[in-house]
Image 1 (spheres, rainbow, N blue to C red):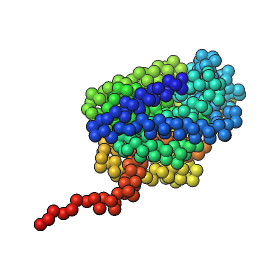
Image 2: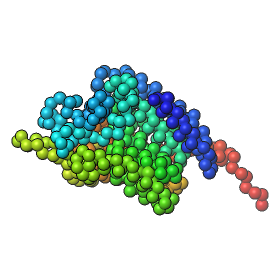
Image 3: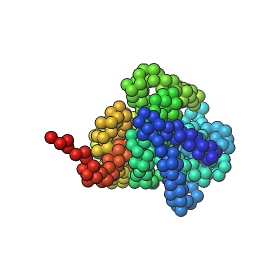
Image 4: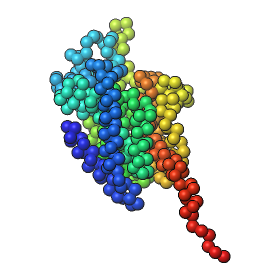
Length: 395
């Protein structure tokens, strides 16, 4: 399995690294594989040092793990024989089916993809899977930044984002947000490369990994239409359609309607009566107050737990001058997520940082890389540039 992942990654990196236009994508394979190995080594060692059985299953993680266990050992999605205790214990973490079954509240794609690790290594394999996802996310972030900068600047930006932000706190985890962010970054990477159908497929998979990514689909479609025409937007939508259709059919099978999701069937008990709660009603906060908290909260604020994003401010100025459409795409996605989750009552349900904003860190990578590249050039060239300046012609 791991060998297959490395082979796939090598082929993808090689494809992205082929010269295009000005040849800026040359020299990508070495830094990308080096970055992969560095993150695997550092995060793997840190995770191994912290390891105690099951302690990496934090917050919602046990429910994702139990979905994988149910699929592997029972071949179904009914969690009643995995969860001890009644609905008063687990009601808010499961989705009540029409037949009374306890179905997963959370998306099941990560649980499905992690099954080989669970089968091969048991439950600790889920931690190994998570470390691999973080390493692959670092490479995907680098490749996204590489579109606009040198390989070393892109690798530096990826390292800063992985180890200089709250992302590092999720290496010891079984994080659905890391996984969903990886899929989304791959979708964006393919979209800006003009691989519309493949980008659409990853975009659909990103929705299957995290339902709120559904709102990013129109943004990417708009980018595809603006940059490459309506045919590209159509191919993107066709690529995403199988995953979106599969989600709709799953909703029909479990809850009776394509528009009734697992987040609409959470359980609360009221005087012994079983009621279902929809998360749609939880996005009712003041967006400006929520935005302020998302940025400045001491434990969860973006600027306090990921100050590296400040480098993106001058970087976006440089990026707009060079690639205005890509800069607009990243900014619209980032601003949308900030405002959208700013209205969510439970935006701060993370053990550190704001896990809902992992994609914001990823889309800042190209701007961070350009800022790093500009700083290095300014440090290296001012005096030499003046010395090498051509002499004025004689009168």
